[in-house]
Length: 122
Image 1 (tube, one colour):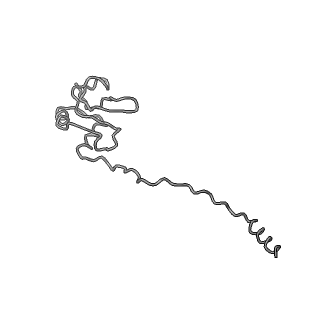
Image 2 (tube, helix red, strand yellow):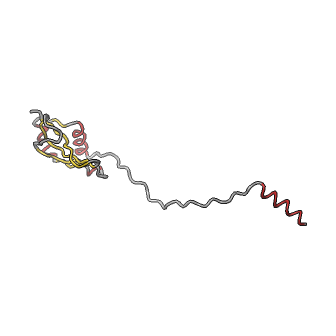
Image 3 (cartoon, rainbow, N blue to C red):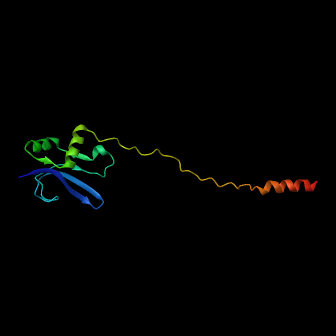
């Protein structure tokens, strides 16, 4: 029997949640699992809290020949090394920008008209 460590999809549309399970390779993705050894929630903002694993059980299953899927192997490596990458911090809070009212532009003819009116009065 080929045993795999892979993810079983749970949750709902646009809100995925996965259980990391020990399964027979011939079973369907969401089929019956031999054992559940962790969870993966990709919607959590904090990357270090996305994965929970029972490492003693995973090590046991790997020692008896279970093969992790590619994605699960990456999650196991990151969990062991505590290497979740750099988290992107949110931008700092800023006060809302207030638009200034546009100032009336002085046309080129206005100073000439004022200059023309001034000598006419004298």
